[in-house]
Image 1 (cartoon, rainbow, N blue to C red):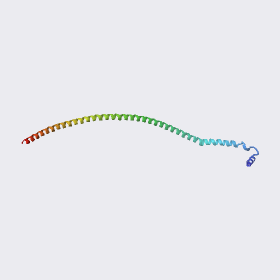
Image 2: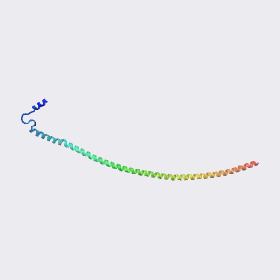
Image 3: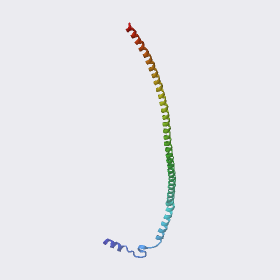
Image 4: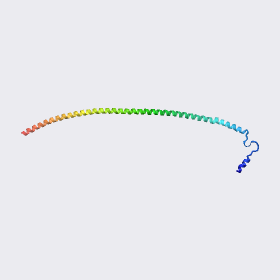
Length: 156
């Protein structure tokens, strides 16, 4: 604390000016500062600001294009999803119609096959009946001839 009071007492200037002397130095420093600001503004800040502005415009245009492309992609996605849904419905309808037609065809072919099998069985059954009748008739004749043969042998 003592050192501070000594410093303050020693800093007294005798004569004009003192601590805040406004002479030609202050306006000269002010002019230098203004010139430095103007030079820095021309050399550094203006090109830097133009580059920043160009970059901002580039980003904004690309974002705009990207949002347009995204909106179009969403629109196409919805359109394709709707088309896919309609195609699926049509395919399902076509499958059911095809199954129905094939079932009808199968039923018709089954009926035709059943009629053919029934007629074949009828012809086979009639043929067997005829063969049975013929076999019985021939057997009857053989039995009668054997009976006659046995009668003749017994009578001898």
